[in-house]
Amino acid sequence: MAETLRCEKCGAPNRAPLESIAAGKARCGKCKTPLAMPQRPIDTNDRLFAKEVLESEMPVLVDFWAPWCGPCKMMAPVLEQLAAKHVGRLKVVKLNTDEFPQPAAPYHIQSIPAMLLFKDGKVVHEIIGARPLAALEREVLAKL
Ligand SMILES: [Zn+2]
Image 1 (cartoon, rainbow, N blue to C red):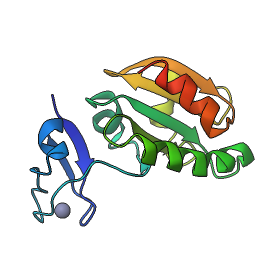
Image 2: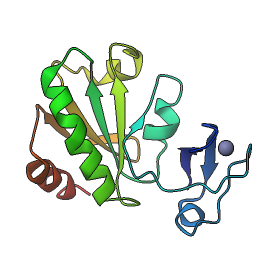
Image 3: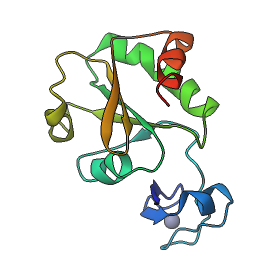
Image 4: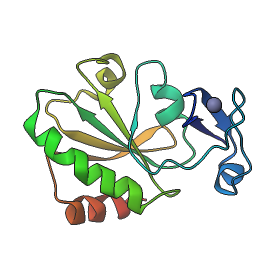
């Protein structure tokens, strides 16, 4: 099992065992910067969705959002806090569905914000619409 993380310095995607990332022993193959557990939501795209979400060892909460969506903007700071609070336990990923509609297509999302929790590449929970941090956290943690 391994985790794909993008290097904070050069942006290169790296795949490394979760244990060695957590222990600070994994380094970027390109620039040798140590890889760190993400402390903030990660902006994914059509190219990296499979690696960053479907093949992730950690549970992943994916926020499907779009720039024109007001409630999505409200969720941005909430997701920042959620990611910071659960470093190493939960990965928070954001997908701009205007820019990258393709990875969202299989999930038939009718309205956004839609936050889907993935475990081992499968959706285990769907949260539709904005939530305060406490409510979002409760829903997500119940499914981890
Ligand atoms: Zn690097």
